[in-house]
Amino acid sequence: MRSKHALGPRTDSPARGVLRCLAAAVLSIAFASQAAPPKPSTLTATDVLAQSAPSDWQPVDPENTLYLELESGRVVFELAPEFAPKHVANLKALVREKYFDGLAIVRAAEDYVVEWEDSDGKRPVKTAATTLPPEFTSASSAGQPFVRLPDGDIYAPEVGFSGDFPVARDPKTHQRWLAHCYGMLGLGRDNDPTSGFGSSPFVVIGHTRNLDRNDTLIGRVVQGMELLSTLPRGHGPLGFYEKLEQHVPIKAMRVAADVPAAERSEVEVLRTDTATFQAYVEARRSPPLGWYVQPAGKIDVCTVRMASRPRAAAPAK
Amino acid sequence: MRSKHALGPRTDSPARGVLRCLAAAVLSIAFASQAAPPKPSTLTATDVLAQSAPSDWQPVDPENTLYLELESGRVVFELAPEFAPKHVANLKALVREKYFDGLAIVRAAEDYVVEWEDSDGKRPVKTAATTLPPEFTSASSAGQPFVRLPDGDIYAPEVGFSGDFPVARDPKTHQRWLAHCYGMLGLGRDNDPTSGFGSSPFVVIGHTRNLDRNDTLIGRVVQGMELLSTLPRGHGPLGFYEKLEQHVPIKAMRVAADVPAAERSEVEVLRTDTATFQAYVEARRSPPLGWYVQPAGKIDVCTVRMASRPRAAAPAK
Image (cartoon, rainbow over all chains, first blue to last red):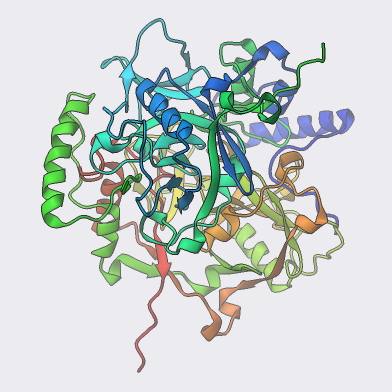
């Protein structure tokens, strides 16, 4: 039989859409478990992005963009120097001294992290620092950009977005920190908190908010995430690969600004200080009725899923 | 240089462990952002499982166990008939009429779901129902097992565990439902809520709690999750594969009870109605100082990560 069954909304003809919407509205009332169900958004998140203006997006600064070059392709990271200036500077120093070139991804822990480092410990650090004071949190102040998500959070008093990064804050301690959401880039460390100087970057591929404020996060993946999330998992302790031949070679890491313009991956990210972003969050929180019969009316900071896309080439002069 | 830097605690010698623990304790005080930081657990979650008794585990009933046989290996599911009896029975009927044998995984949406179905719609349903009333939620009552997680949740008034499934409840409406955590098994559907009869099973591979109460969940992966989570992602709309040659063939689906005993994968799951489970949750919530300098003191229902393991063979008589 023809199976059309799939999870999540699909595109539909307008007429069928109206009928389905009505049917879903009736079902929504039947299934509603709250006296006042959340009001559904009129647009899907996909619609919101499709209808966005060019000004809703901002390019990522090449000086704050890193490339991880694998045999399978390029992973692009946006750095967050406003949260961890020392660690961002030191990782860029390591990248610029080609510390990572020829090393490998050595760990892929299921529902947790992917990590790369010098597994045999012979690679010299030439110019970068090898210890750094932790930047697990930083000072929070009124002038900083912060778009608060009012939906609540169990790990922090406040969550939201600064630029396009998921952020948590504590108004009592006046501290803020990047949240360990899917795709975040951090710097692995040993037990000594000053040891996370950058030689062991990791990317979150699962549920890890319980790591918040225990290591230094410095950015996030804005393109190529699946090159990391689909890596074979390691079966040694902590998800390290057990055999050398399982290691995933790193051809190079580069700061985008150091790469010839023609070879760059230009990426832009959805701005969070816009009405479009508010509509996007609302569409994630309370999607239109149709496939959904009971919108959650809530969205957690990691499930908002910040949007990024390849940047359209500038028109030829 | 020798790099030991990695995310997450590592094993350590006792003497070094004491020193590190002291150092971390000092740092913990320095970094603590709350007046009363959470009291760290004395054991890691790994320690708790290693010290568990055989009675802390329970075998999964072969009649409630499904196998998804892929060329890469076997994925094992535990079903939850107490939450969705009609859908569990109907999926087993489909499996037993060999509906899925020779079909394929057709969708792998990044940070979302993997799904399989009959993509060309020619496979007949022989014995199973092709519509079913939704079991998105079910009645909650006092006699049901429920180990509440007191840490809070933004999507539901109450969360916790029934058996080894992550569960949400609403005491006002007296409804409960399975939570869309990583590894949960659900039944995809079209816009019509009665259409999720079982022909399009999906597994959560990302952050999807916002789907709660919008489709019928019926179980979870207890072995072989990485065979699904590492699949190449689809780049068509909604993460469907765009080309037939990307489809991941399904050799067969089987109810474990129908498989000769010698060919079964016997799995046991951590019981939740035990002191060991409480210690496990506490170790996840507030891990020992050492690598951690500031335990979160909270854990969300999906990040608890229910434990399962191959069942030791019964001793020969």
